[in-house]
Image (cartoon, helix red, strand yellow):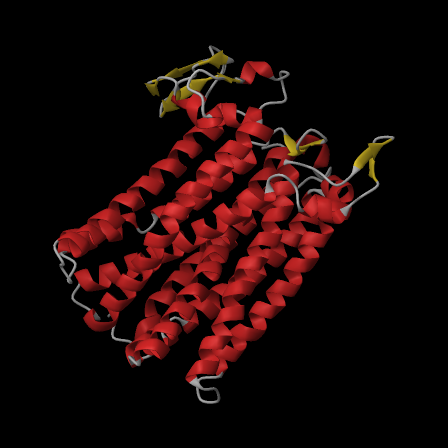
Amino acid sequence: MDNLLAARALMGASLAFHIVYATIGIGLPLMLMLAEGLALKTGDDAWHRLARGWIRPAGVLFAIGAVSGTILSFELGLLWPQFMAFSGPMIGLAFSMEGFAFFTEAIFLALYIYGEERLSRRALFLCTIPLTLASAVSAVFVISANGWMNTPAGFQMIDGAPANVQPMRAFLNQAWLHQAVHGTLAAYVATAFAVAGFYAVALLKGRGEADGKKALSLSLSLALVAAPLMLVTGDWAADAVAENQGAKLAAMEAHFKTSAAAPLIIGGWPDPETATVSYAIRIPKLLSFLAHQDPDAVVQGLDAFPQGTTPDPRLVHPFFDLMVGSFFVMALALIWYWWPRWRRKETEPGRAQLKCVAFAAPFGIIALESGWMVTEFGRQPWVVKGYLRTSQAVTPNDGLLLVFATFLFVYLALTVGIMRLLQRQPKETGGEVSHD
C-alpha cells in the first residue's frame, strides 16, 4: 500500500464510521421533537417516556460523533496539507459556521438531557426544536465544503494560486444545495429505519409491545414522509450532476461511449479496457430521458473527457446501484407496512411485516455510505475538481499504513462498544424493551 492509498484508506475509514454516528445524530433529535410534540398534543405520557428512552443513544452518539469529527479535522491537516493550503480560504467559512451549529446543538441537548426535573414539558419540547435545527444546519455546512470540492467556486486562479476569494460564493457553490437537502433527508430516513428495525426485532421477540408499537409507527411515519422527498431530491441531484459533473454521471451509469438515446444500465460489471459492461440490464433511452428529459438526447460518455481525468466506473457504478437498490428495499418495506393499515384498516403489524422492516433497517445506512462512495470516488482523480489532484494533495510523510491499521482497530472496537451500550439502554432507563 503506497502513501497515497494509505492516506485515502485512513480518511475513507474514518469518514465511513463518522457518517454512521453523524447520521443518527442528525435524525434522532427530530425523533425526539416529534415524540415530545405528540406527548404535548395528545397528553399521552408514553410518548414522553419513549423520548426519554432515547436520551442515552442521542448523548452517546453526539459525543462519539464529536470525537470522530475532531479526528477527521486533524486528518485533513496531517494527511492532506496541500489540500488545506489550497482550499482553506474557500471552505473555512463553512467549517467555522459548523462549529457554531455544533455548540448550539450541544447546549440544547444538555438542557434536554438534564432538564427533566427542572423544566416543564413544553420547555423540554421547545429545547428539541433548536436541537433538531442545529443538527441539520451542522450537516448543511459540512456538506457545503464537500459540494465545493465537486463544483469549486468563489475564487480565481492567478499565477497558479487561488486569489480574489469570495467565501459566500464558495459556500453557495453549484452542488451544495441539492447535496445538503438530499443528504439531510437521507439521514432522517436512515435513522427512522434504524429505530424501526430495533423495535421490530423487539416486537418479534415479544418484548415492549406498548412503547414498541408507538416507536415503530412514529419512525415509519417519518420515513413515509421523508423517503418520497429523498427520491425527488435524488432526481434533482442527478440532474445537477448531469449538468455540472458529466464524468461522474458517466461513471455512475457505466456509460463509456458518448451516444444519443443512451440506455440506462442496471447492475453488471464495467470493464474500462473494452468499454463494455457485462451481465447488465439495459433499459433503452432511459438514461437520456433521466439526464436531459429527452429520450433521444446525447449523453456524454467517459470517452468525452481527457484520459486520466475520469473516475473509475468499477468503483462508482456498483456503489451507485447499491444506493438506488437500498432505497427500493426500504420503499418496499414501507409499502408493506402501511398498505394494510390504509387499505384494510389494520392496526397491528403482522410478523411478516415486522420481519420485512427488520430486514430493511440497515439499508438506510447502506444507502448513505454508498452515496458517499459515489460522491468521493466519482470526483477522482481530483480532490478539488479540475484544480488539484488527490496525488498532489497528499502528505509526503511515510508510515501511514501502521496509522491506518491502528485507527481501523480503534474504530471497530469503539463501534462494538457503542452497540453493546445501546443494546442495554432500554433496560437501564426503565423502558419496556429488554435484551436479557
